[in-house]
Each structure stands twice: as structure tokens, then as C-alpha cells.
Length: 340
View (tube, rainbow, N blue to C red):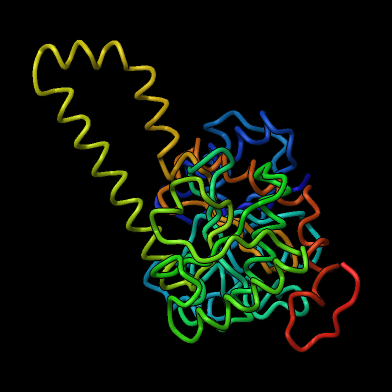
């Protein structure tokens, strides 16, 4: 498995990115190509005592100050743009980047291209909830959506949940302001009708509308919504988790008795914290792109970047993209429906 890494993307690049990539090479057996300023990347590789890693020089770096809609076009020699071109040209099986989310999404769309027939690519993080986790699709790529976009998100999320999340018959819910069929605005009503039809035909396991509380209650494996709603849900949940962990720490440090209790529960608390840490999740798949692209968290350390590469490896091996291509006629409103 050949993984192309944007070595200059993210808050901790290139040191932590290279460290995580080297761990992935050793632990996962992947073949690496690191793209970035060669002298900086090679210095990091030397510090890690790594060998057998290909380095491709790219002199420019896309920063958070760059306009995401034009960054990869204006900075053609950036590590992100070069990595994406290499993926398009078949020099690797997947790309992983911790750089600007908007730039990566735009670059992947313009350079690697979407799957033919897919209207919009989606950011689809898997959050810790229930037995298998829950995919929130979309979480920010598409602020304004049409019912067809959301129908396609439901299909793509279902394929991912079944293949990579271990859910044998993933339940799909439409995020809304209430569970009743009549809730929401025009877009929700039209989307509900499309998802219900797909569910009645046995193509997805649509359970109806869901509210925000249902997402973390294990009620569904795929939560479908527009990017504005999804991003608010994602950032809100991250904020709540941080507040909970801080509040819990305050409780355990409140008295000597509580500190003793904390010592007894230290291992369990560490495991709980790790399960809720966004850095431990690894990355977010860009579903709808014709080749595997994974967005790692911007503040990725070596461990979280290793997790992102592991996710990219699984994504590339899963055959999800081929599954989407095979079923595209069911995911387009203007296409003839054939056999799934």
C-alpha cells in the first residue's frame, strides 16, 4: 500500500507528521512518499533514524491564511498540490494531509476529481458513539445542500459504515429539528421523501428523522445533514467533550478523598479520555473523490497522524469507491435506475 503524505500540512509539520508517518511505515508496512521541503523532511527522517522513505521536494506551503478556493491553483508547487497530482497520476494509493481543510477539499475536487455522477464530495468524520461509531456526513464541505446531495451522502455513508465501521446493516437518519415526518423545511421534506423511497426499496436502512441527541445515543450509524448543521454539531460536540473532561478533572482534584478515587480510576479515565479525543480518531475521509483522500486533524501529533494513515490504508483497501461507482445510478436523480 503506497501512501502519499503532505509533510508540510498542519500545526506540527513537518516533525510530528514525519514521526507519525515513520511509525506507520514500521507498524503498518506501508510504502511512504513524503512531499515537502526536502531538506526539512530529510532532517526529520534522520532524527527518526528512518530509511527507505521517498521524499519529493515541494517548495511552497499552503497556510491557513491562503484562500482555500484558490490555494492549490496559486501554489502549484505546494506540498498539498504536488501530493494530490501524484495521487491523480497513480504514484500512490491514497493521500493524507493535516493541512487546510478547505484547500484539501477544493484541491481534491479540482485535481483528483469527484467520482463521475457524484454532485459534491463530503467531509465524513466518524464520532465515538454506540457500538460502531456514527458518521456525520456532511460536516462542513457543503454549507448549502440540495436533496440530491443528501441522498448521495446517505448512500456513501452507508457503504463506508458497512465496510469500515463494522455495521452489518447501518441505520441512516436525517438530522432534523424533530423526529416527526413533517418536521423541518422544504429541503428536509424533499430529502426525507428521497431517503424513505430508498429505504422502502431496500437500498439503505433509513429510520427517519433524528435529533441531535440521537446522534450520540447510538440510534444510527450514519447521520445525514448539510455541512452547516454538521459543522455546528461537530464543533459543539468537541467543545462539550473538552468541557466535560475539564469539569471531571476539577471534581477529582476537589478533595483528598476524590484524588484517591481518581488514582483508583486512573486507567479507566485515561481510556475514556482517549476514546473521546479527536486526535485519536485519526482523520476524516473525503467521500465522493475518485481516489482515497484523508484529512488528518490540523493539530495532529505523531500518534494521531499514524491513526490517519491507518484509516487511509483501510479506505484504499476497502473498495468503497468502486462500490459507489457501481451504484451511481441509484444516487442520481437524472439517471436511469438499473440493478444495484
